[in-house]
Image (cartoon, rainbow, N blue to C red; front, side, top):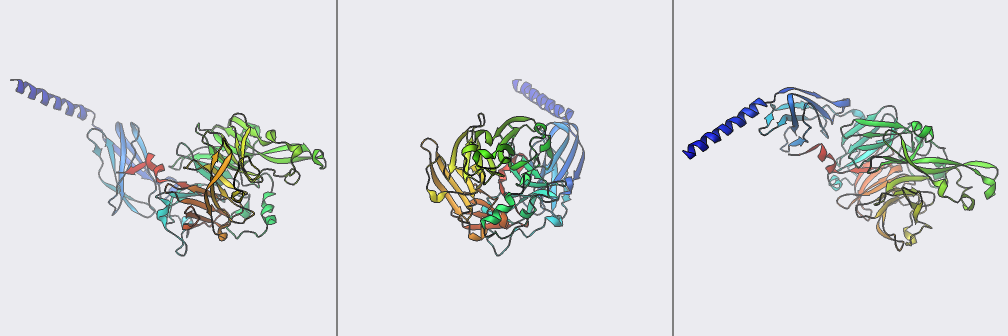
Length: 493
């Protein structure tokens, strides 16, 4: 009798569950495909349900056994799902899955991506140069084109553009990944710095290098706007610098970063009217300097720092010589404690600036605060940051030695010593007097950019080249995009 009662109860429970799910049955009303901005590597799937549920898309390239799945959407009736990093001119299969206890799947469907745009097909990788793409460890290289149309491209180890974003009215000087997995782009007028846009052999003299530096406030690789773009290619916001702080800051000098709070931190061109008779000059002059501006993504100023407030102008022996551009700060980043690191090219130093008081906490490099082997002094360096080993790393342009490459130092900030760790100089043919970057890859190899020669390379920590990309424009720097960045959009099934 008890068994019979238990069986009836079990059947009743099963019937109740079935009736519950039947009552919640979801239908896929429509599935529409489109290619946003007509980009061959990006497909948008608009899914409409008759009830609110979560969905994902399973997809795979024709002939491949590897299947991918997008991340689950939020519960809703309408869903916009993006398929990213697709191969141009390829056939794909896909299914829409409604995520329930018993999943509801659409029929298997197909789409074909269009052929790559002719203007994006370049001979990035050449057979005659090192081309072991596996050294990128599954990631890609992000490059920016500062001419019109401005664009950001991510290139894989085979030399194929896998991600692309374009803006028609302005160039893109530099871009970087943000702490929230988006891209922060520094935008610049395309008519500026034209001589920097085509790779060329280096000038033989320092005098030739100095000429471009004297081109005025907007001739300093400056940006006039900053924008945030998500990895689907959507521009989330754009700030034109002439709208910030009453129009005081019209140009970004070289660099823009996002801090952990989501604020935008940029280098600015700060001027100072000074009586030059105090240092043996004639009359007054407008000195060219630098600063740091912190703003939110609406363009509201949060904090500001001016180097002239921390500088003893009357006892500066070089002020007359470099009055037009005394410091030439060309890179900005964050130390482990969130204070600011700035590359001061004219001084051949890295400075640490307190993000609250604005005080210069220390200086690293020639005539700096750290004891170091003088043979490792860097000059006109770029791309300062803290690498994955916790060391301070820069790209050493090394004007005086005419050799460029990645260097890093372990800093003892108590005893003020700097111990060299990485010293990966590139061949003389890859020397670049200005611009450039260097980063440690997950596999401990280095991604180095010799901007003026148009070369982006993967090297070991001694500077041996294993992979080389040839850019038809001058890349201000080349940043690494690890494969894990895409985990919030899709994963292997």
